[in-house]
Length: 142
Image 1 (cartoon, helix red, strand yellow):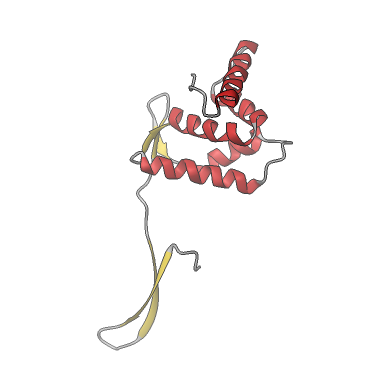
Image 2 (tube, helix red, strand yellow):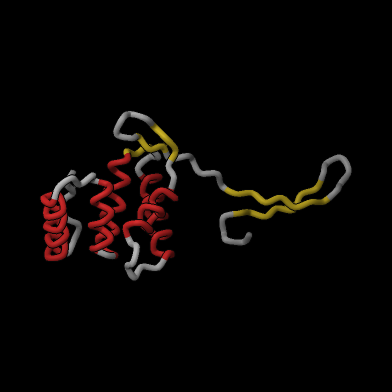
């Protein structure tokens, strides 16, 4: 329980002087994701992790990497004000995944961007190559 996210306090009842311990933790404001159709739902980091696991099947990536990436995206979403779009979440995942594994990135992009033809894959491969030669994230495409 001592992971730094809780505060332990010793207290006493004002009436009977019984001593007891309470554990307090910070409750963070919820993050809301606006979907493409206009619907809004709570942020679910497990959706990110499941998508990463699927995109990385057979790739040499540790599960801790998925958790860390989801944590980074969640932290950035809080920094953005707690109200983000599903497009923002997808791009944030892609930006980080490109640096971890390019094949997994291409697989994730094919689902996230709803690829329908070979040209979609070619465009994404081109973006990954541009990023690799430029040394930073490629401009995002839709």
